Length: 172
Image 1 (spheres, rainbow, N blue to C red):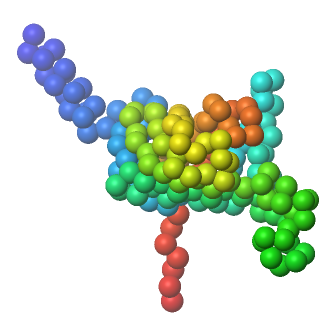
Image 2: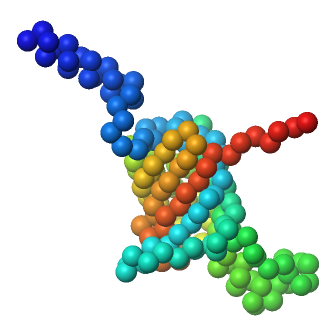
């Protein structure tokens, strides 16, 4: 009986210190996400299982999570066209369409519970999201990488995003 108690206590200690490697780590609190993350990929998964790079082959962007539960992200295609007029308020219909379809920015508050990331959207360049509660499922998180899925992507389908933790630039 003592051996069973010792084994149970040892197992509980390992679990409480996160030393059991039974799968990908899951965020437990906002502190686990706090910091700046750089976009690596953003794919749309279609109902037939095929994948399409939502923002092209080399997307750009970042998401910032603060310790006090706020977030801001900007995601974009790398090849957005420059406006011929050099004035964002006088873009052509084609230029404006390319920017709307090739980028999204959102800000608000967030909370984390296990693998669920809840975003309360205060503002977005996709106006349909303003004032909504958005859910993302964290599929993997480590000190260096964050992956999530969005079952209701703004462009339709399921979005799968991968980020890496941003590093401070080296100053010489």
